[in-house]
Structures are given as structure tokens and as C-alpha cells.
Image (cartoon, rainbow, N blue to C red; front, side, top):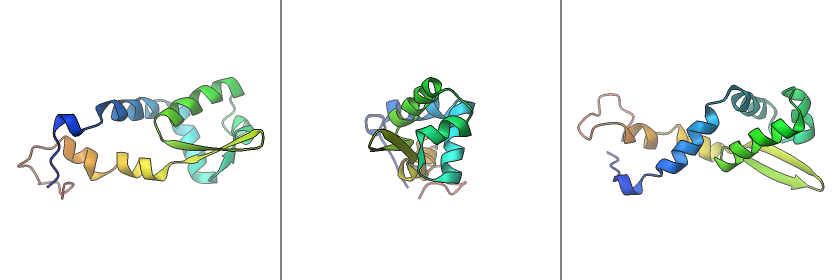
Amino acid sequence: MVSQSPESVDFAGYEATFKALADQKRLQIMYELTQRGNVCVCELVSIVNMPQSKLSYHLKILLDAGLIIKETKGTWSFYELNHAELNRTLSPELCCMFRKADDLSNGCCS
């Protein structure tokens, strides 16, 4: 069973992650990155039908939360999902944080 003390849990990190996920446009951006892989910001503007200034705002929030990765090639920025962070966020680690130590009935904690 996984047991964590409050001092070892990155509550601020989870807060940033869930705030980033709590927006339809950011979820749409992540969905498009899931479907398309590594995408140039110039393409994302038309894909999500959003001005670059607003898109940059949303991309910064996703970047700060660690949900996407940015790669710069020349003057263009390319974005893709950070699968490692998504897997950690949607993992038993988070599930177990909200389980009593004696409650293993749902099987999420090992």
C-alpha cells in the first residue's frame, strides 16, 4: 500500500495541474496535441480557432503545469503532450492520496 505524509505530497503541483485542466480551451488544445503529436504554434492557431495571444496564454498555463512540452526550432515553437506527467497525474499515486489506509476495496492502491 502507498502511504504518503502531507509533507511529501506536492499539493501545489496538483493544484496547478487541475487548474490547468479546468478549462475547455486548454482541454481542446491537449486533445488536438493528442491527435496530432508535435504541433507548431502556427498550426495550433487555426486548429483551435484562437488568436495567437490567447493561445500563448493557455499554452503557458499548460507548460507551467508540466502538462505539455515545448521545443523551439528556429523561430517556431512546437508543442506536444507530456505523457509522463499525465500518467503521473492520472495514476494510483493520486488515487491513493484520497484513500484511507485501511480501504483497499477499489484496488487502485498497491
